Length: 358
Image (cartoon, rainbow, N blue to C red; front, side):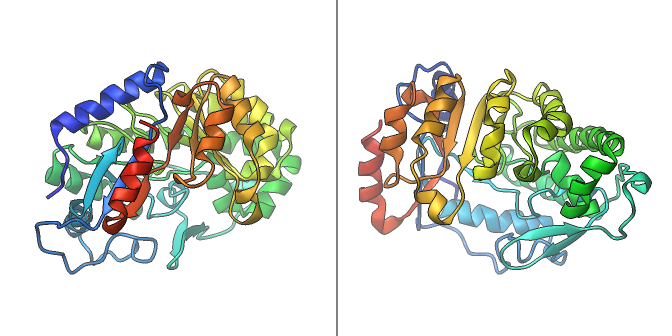
């Protein structure tokens, strides 16, 4: 049994409304405690993951039932809410919707073209019978039937437009094509952009009755939003970012409600000024990366984002840099954390840390 009431949903909505107005007086801090008694039997099938996303013998109903069990083992504290991640089909699953092979292992999913063709011969089209599009839609339908909208199923990770294009051409070839075939790149950017919007709209039509909306970043939104991205832009200059990425980002952002941008790694920092100048991008998710970058002082980045009037999503838990970030941003309301998970035997410790900021 999922432990979450209509009253709690009302509190989530109201707190986020206040947060957007800088009236909450604190960051958004979702805390999930795992290990509660699910008060139901555990299904035999595994949890949906990168490793088994291509196992079509598991029915959509079984996938949802297992996720229901997992959510039933959780207590939701702070600003957390029942959320189903739908990113297990990989970052940039829009490429699979358009005909790429979906490849997977235990740790990730990636996409390869069924046939490599020169960019001038590459033409992408919508296929309503695409098996991955059908599969993901069926999972959403099963979730809506099971939960009636009381679990927020996140939008699947459609990917950035150039990331999708790179799946068809390969990253190296796309880098060459930016120089050698700029008109063809632009053609495909807008073809993919239109198809991306169609995929988004069709999934949204299925989940429109939910208590709210989210995506792989697990930020709650009353209206349909998204974490925009372009991981490919790590490798390109400011000029190429403006030429091939920024206009499409602006176009898509205008269709969404308070979207964020996923700034992934130090190589993308060169594009931060351009992103902060976009009035339709409302927040930045800064991910410095793993390894030494994670331990570096990014106060200047957080301060810059906050001074530009944007919200910030940070990955760190209670014990890492939360106080440091709050010390350099304009308002505590500027910050939203990714969900923080603690086991049941650490519940008292976690609640004590949470209450420090509430």
